[in-house]
Length: 492
Image 1 (cartoon, helix red, strand yellow):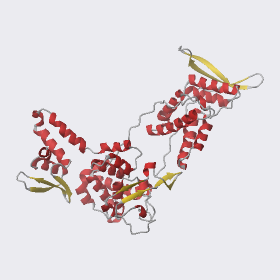
Image 2 (cartoon, helix red, strand yellow):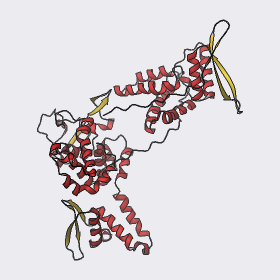
Image 3 (cartoon, one colour):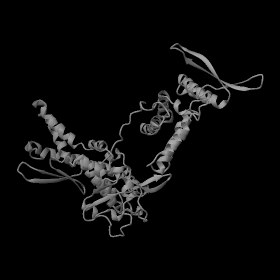
Image 4 (cartoon, rainbow, N blue to C red):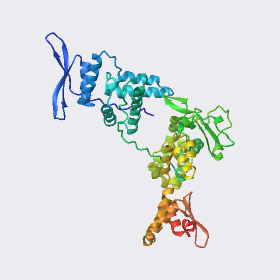
């Protein structure tokens, strides 16, 4: 997989310092700029510096965060120098803050240092005192990250969260605070909208499993039933599975560190957990091996990491999905060493799902999303699902509630009873309602079979009937028209 590099936009340089040489041969640098004074229109003024480095630094501050803040920062520095105070630079403080952090991974420490060197110092400069950082400067930095660097809102939150935590620690430092207050605590950040949690329904799950090579299918089912993250189920060993109860002990995870995969702890403290999978799923696993062996291996015997599964299992399955859409039989021929169902069988059984599947964000994480959403749909208490999924907060688990539309559809049907009777008895609306019930499995049954879909319904005489339709929509329509009675109405 190609590595992604963060685009770092060049910072505005501001006005160009101009040199002036005195009769004695001393060269100084003047920076001209405009600044509002007392609410009036901006007036032109200038500052003279003894060296080009500080002149260029001040010129850049005139652009971000602006001339008023730039003058305040400069005056604070000059006052500290005049009193002989050895002030602490923001750059130096942040590195010392990272040095003192405990309980974090080495990769996290490296990430924080990258924030300092690539995002903070290039914007605020090498010579900014830690107590010169103001809320206006912090807000300007956030705008710079979002609009000039092009960081996503989530990335902006991550980078700003580090700086805010560091400045908070400086304000709490004892016996004497390093700064009077945290200038980052009230900065408004761009909103972060949760990414779509794409999960599969039963038929979509079956379809994708059939697109995977048979070798990967037991792991695919296990990943869904255990709700484990890819890095977690790849790190399991045979001894982590109890074949009698289906208990799965999750205590380790593969992690990406400094360009390499290494074994570490799960994502959070609650990530260390014991969850359970169906015994039917356990029965598909090869547990007749040494207990210290990895539970899942690649075809060439290497431990399964997220990258290896994606390259060897997941990506080829998605390629087969695209081939079905495009009518390309190549991935399903003998030359491709394909051991699953044929192109014709897959297209006949699941052709109606192809476009819908391609609308999803298909990643290996879909197994985790699917397992969590299925358990919530089946009525498992949310706190149980949250614990078994290793979520740090139930609020994270609640995001999966919107994956299932069944509860919402049922609520829509209930509230429809409040509509005027004349509108509720319109034939087209009634038929649409019955079609929805068929799709939700509340009226008749639809089963994928070779050659199409088998529609099963009970007629007015109480006889169970069936017929095979090549088209899914035709099967739905037939059951909606011919199923005798309304199960919801009868139950009511």
